[in-house]
Structures are given as structure tokens and as C-alpha cells.
Length: 625
Ligand SMILES: Nc1ncnc2c1ncn2[C@@H]1O[C@H](COP(=O)(O)OP(=O)(O)OP(=O)(O)O)[C@@H](O)[C@H]1O
Image 1 (cartoon, rainbow, N blue to C red):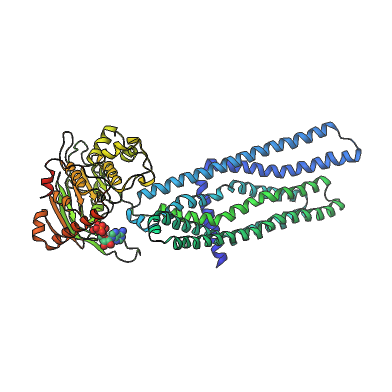
Image 2: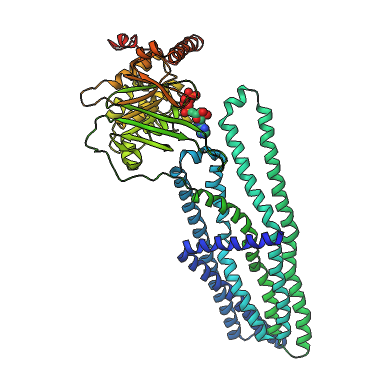
């Protein structure tokens, strides 16, 4: 079983190497041919050294003088071989390095590109730490054996050359070679087979350690506030210990096999000297030939290790490659249609949900996912605001994800201006709709970069206009370097409400024709929130009002909406104006009242991060509706 598995790993490893060669054929050709040149030069140098000893040194000792011409020729031959060997080493090393690092870079790009293409459901099933490990250490591991590969290929050619030259020299010495070389090869194979499960385990544990570390850092707040430091440290330490043990076991195996691999060629040289001396006595070989063969055995030892390096790295490479391939082969990415919504028309669009059903993919693929939305139908008319209201878990966030096509419905259709969102091109969709999530994500960059995200054609005037609309111009202007202020990792130098408004400005600067707000201003003072929403609804010179779908919890925000869609258990229970629903739907009235009480308590307990400015004239009337 074990050897079957190792054979399997060996085969799969060779397939991975084959892929590496197919991807970088030219660089591999340069590196491998340099290495073959080096290998053949090793064999040649053994015979040149033998010839120098036999034809120059021995006669010189016998006669007590050295003919200058012979000495000069010997020196020139040895120097020439050395220079050619340097060329071979240079070509091999440069080629192998280029090949390895180019493959790593290409696959890092492919993996991260794939992450961006894969759907939200895939990301929800895969931990961030694992994704980091895939793009980093798994890609590195996959292409690790590429570094010694050209050397190993050159060594194989060198071995064939060495055996042939041994047979040409003397059959008895050739038999010694035939005994030692296959034994070395076999030892390398046994080594790599033993290494296979150990390396695979270490690679898996590396990913797990990275996953736990990432989760602990990400959840540092929870860990600290809940006093879970010790448990979290132990959780990490336990897996780190497993990794340590796995690596120690790798090291132990190395410790056993490395000396054997080192000793075997030495024993070979000894055998050559014993057998060679006998053959010399019999007059079957000359001194030059004996020296050549003994020298050959000495210099062969090191290159043969290259085969071992490749074989020993194969299991780790296979483990890394399989994990990388899982990402590259993962399916479920959304295919986009060819349609676009007329970009010249920057006016608001109509969003329509028609009998939409949705279920999340279950954790276990064979189980059916429970339906979280059923028969959902409503419309956000162009330029109007619709509020989604419902108890927790009712499906509000799911609806916002469907509206911006982060996920697709199981049945039914989501339309923008009468076009199924699945038929829209990715570009057109991104230009038309924008989602602002409850948890804002801010990059460790300047305020300006966070808002423009390198989208073309966005100057400072547009950035300030968006900040104004998002109610963020005041605090940004007060920052030490204004738009150039860096906001720290995840915007740590900003308050929650400031971060939310920054992400709102980011969505607004692209002038979306439909804005989807998933409780996007929850950390902002309610009156500021209402002012922002009122500003978005109002048409200004040069700016049409936006269609807005907003998940709302506050009475003031809900009251601003033209229509309220009230959800319970993934179904639309009632639609109408806030006032109508208050009067006719008891569940709705209870919920809004409960929200209001919670709001008052929150305001009393913590307040908000910024004092509300006076509301725009006339807004108070609207809010108090
Ligand atoms: N990634 C997910 N995988 C599986 N089920 C999910 C996932 N996200 C949400 N759900 C389930 O879908 C249902 C609707 O969730 P959703 O987040 O849309 O509700 P919500 O109304 O926005 O809730 P809240 O007000 O608490 O944010 C819930 O039952 C929830 O458990």
C-alpha cells in the first residue's frame, strides 16, 4: 500500500514536472542543455585528469623532468574544461532559477485571479488562511523541484556517458560502476518514497497553522475581550507542535539517508581502487585509466544527489500542486452575458425581483440547501427608494447580494431596466449597480485611493462631491493630510461610522444608477444617516437621483423610503408605505418599535462617533412623517 502510494506520488510528481517543462520549454532547454554539457564535461574531465596523470605526471616522476609542451597542453586542457564547466553551471543555474521563479509568479497570479473569479459561496467555504497558504507556500512547494530538475536531467545523461566510458575502458571497472550507480539510484528512490507522506503532512500542517494564525489575528478583538488568549494560544501551539513534529520527522529521515548517499560513492571509489589495482597488475588497464575511473567516481557523487533532491521534493510538490489545482479547477464562477445598459444614459434604473427563490450551498455538497428566499417579488422604480425591513435572518442581506449579482437565484429573475442581470456584462453591471455592505472594508492606503480604487476619470472634484454626499467631507477635510491621509490597515485610524461613510463615498463616486445599502450607515448618527439618504434621493444639477434599495433599521431612514418591503422567513409579507404598514401589519409595527427602543438605548449607552450636523431644511418634516 505504502509503496503503491509512493509510486503514485512519483508518477504524479513527474506529471507536475512535465507541466513545468511544457510551460517554460525554452528556458528549460537552455538550463537542461547547459547541465548536459556540464555532465559530459565531468566525464571528459575525468579522462583528461587521467591522461595528465598517466602521460605527464608519471613520466615526469620517472624521468625527473617535465616537457614544457606537455605541461602547457595539460594546463590548457584543464583550464578549457573548467571554463566550459563554468559556462554549463551558469546556464543551468540561471535557467533553473528563471524557470522556478517565473512559474511561481505565474501561478501566484493565476491563483489570486481565480480567487477573484470564484463566487462568494466558494469563499465562504474556504478559510482566508488557507487561501493565503495556497497562493504562497503551496505555489512555492509545487515548483520547488524545478530548481534541481535541469541538474538532475544533466546528471542522467552524465551517468549514461559514465557507464559507456567505463565499458570502453574496462569491463571489470564497468561492473563496479553498474553496481554502485543503480544502488545510488535505488537509495534515492527509497528515500523519496519514505519522504512522501512526511512532506505531504508537513505541507498540509503549514496551511493549517497559517489558517489558525490568520483567524486568531482577524478575531483579535473577540479573543481579547472574551479572555480567550490562553485557549487561542494553545489552539495555535497544538497545531504548531504538530508541524514541528512533522518537520522533525522530515529532518530525521534526511539525517539517516544523507550520510548513506554521501558514503556510497566513497565506497564505490574504494572498490574501483581495489579492482583497478588488480587490473593494473594484470596489465588490463593503464595508470591513466585507473586514475580516470577513480576520479570519475569521486566527482560523480555530488551530481547524483541532484536526482535525489528532485525525487525528495516531489511529494511536497505534488501536495502543493494538488492544493493549487483545487483552486484553479474550482468551478462556480459566474458567466456574464453580452448585454450592456446604455452607458450614455446615466439616469437611475429600475430593479425588479420576479418570483425569486434562493438557497445557499450547503457545507456538505450532497445535502440540498434549505431555501432562504421564496417567491420574492418587488420593484424599485427608477429614482425611487425602497426599504427592506424584516427580523434578523429574514433574508435582507441575501436580497442585496442578489440585487448586485454576488449570487444568482435558484429560480426566478432579477432584472435591471428589464434585463436579466445574468445577461449583463461584468463591466456594465459594475458601472450600473453598487453595494455598500454593513461591514466596511477600507484598504491601507490614502483616502483618495480608497475612494477612486484606481478607476479612470475620477478627479478630486468628483471625490469631494462623493464625500459630501456620503456626509464624509467634514471629517476628511479635518484629517491632517486631507485626501492624502493614509487610513491604516482596514482603516484602523478611522471610527466605524467614518469607515462606513468612506465606503459609501467609494460607491457613490462611480455614480451608480442603483445603490444597494445593506445597513451601510448603522454606525452613523441616525440624523446624519437620514440626511445622507435624503441627499441621495434628491436630484441636483448635473446629478440624477439614484434608485436605492436600502436595508433599514431606523424609523427615520425607513420613513424616507417611497416603499417598504417587509420580509419574514424569506418571504415578502407586506409592501406599502411606512405609514400604511404601521397601521395594517402588526408584525411590522412591533419590529419598528423594537428597533426604535434599541436605538434609543444604543444612543444612550455609546452615542455615535460624530455629532449630527443640523439637518437640511425641510428634512425634519420628512423624517417625522
Ligand atoms: N453563507 C451562508 N450560508 C448558509 N446560510 C446562510 C448564509 N448566509 C445567510 N444564511 C442564512 O440565510 C438566511 C437569511 O440570511 P440573511 O443574512 O439574508 O438575513 P438578514 O435578514 O440579512 O439577517 P440580519 O438582519 O441578521 O443581517 C438566514 O437563515 C441565514 O442563516
